[in-house]
Every structure is written in structure tokens, then in C-alpha cells.
Image: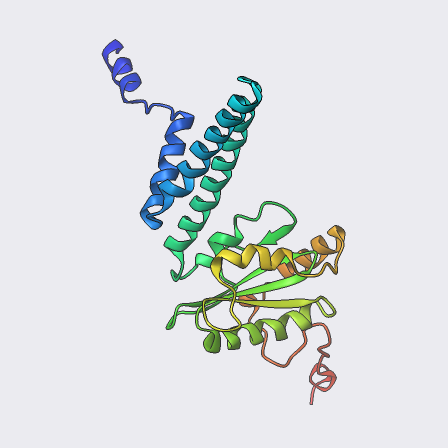
Length: 236
């Protein structure tokens, strides 16, 4: 028993240190951008050098070198974070479902459905939905001409289920009038606010309650305005 416990302890993975994450982030960035070393170490050593020079000129051997070292490290970390983000997005760009992965990184203010609300199995075109203060945002992932049909179908259904709620469509891609994957989050945040936080919850609950994909509502029929056939109820 003692031997088994020792084996379990021996197999326990070691906890990663903070510098391990930095090294991994640097590796990911360099795989995508060959100029990563210049972008990382240039500001770092350049800032330190400026601090040393100012220290020599002013005679403040501690203040200026220390200040510029802290600033250089901070700027370097910000650059590394941005490079990792861009490199990660570049790796998944063009893969079906990449838009959902980027949408999932938005932390607050949005209710995002990770699974596509509409999907073309033949072309692998997808339509994702997010609900926030701007209203309902439909994000298409695929060829614009093909995904336009999915977006129109979803808009027609939403207008029946949640009339009056603003609907925005963002097409992800690199063609004209499309939004690059890297700028998707920014495009969603820039949309004008139209709903309160309470209204966002109400819209989500209403849409979630209906579940159009499972109900199979015929096109052109509004379930909230449908009237029973009175002649059929009385008997023809």
C-alpha cells in the first residue's frame, strides 16, 4: 500500500510556474510571427537602456533605471498578450466554429449560445447567436452568400418570437464587408446599446422557451397569433 501511494505521488503532475506560461506564450507567438523576438526584447532592452542613460545624465542611478525597467516589463507583457491573442486567432481562422471560440472569450454583458443555432451540414456553414444590450447579434461563420440565407431564416423567426428587439448580423471572414475573426469582439462591443440588463434576460428567456429548432414551426405561421379552427372543433 505504501508503495502504491508513493507511485501516485510520483505520477502527480508538477504545477507550472509563471515563467512556464510566459515561455509557452512566447513559443506560440513565434510560431506564427517570426519577428516576435524583436517585438518582445526590443522594447524591453530599449527601455532599460534609456533608463540607464538618463541615470548617467541626471546622476539618479536608482530612480530612472528602476522606473524604465518597470515600464519596459509592463509594455513587454502587454505586447506578448496581444501577440498570443493574434497568433491563437490566426491558427483557428478558417476552421468551422472559430467564431464561437472567439465569442466565448467575451466575459461579461452577453449571453452566448456556444452551439450553432443554424447549421448547413453540407457546406459546414454555421450561424451563432448572442444576446446583449445591443439586442440579438447573429454571427455567421462561412461564405457570405451562403450564410445570408441562414441569417434571414433566423431573423424571420426572431421577429416572430421577440418582435421589436434589434437584430444585428456580423459576417466573419476576409471578403469585402466581412469582419475578420480578430475584430469580432470589437465589432460586437461597438454596436449601439438598446436594451437594459433586465430586458436582455427577458429576451433570452423568451427565445430559450420557444426552442424553434425542436418545435418545428412551419414558415409563415406565428405561434402567438394562430387561431383554432372553430369549424373543426364543432364538427364539419
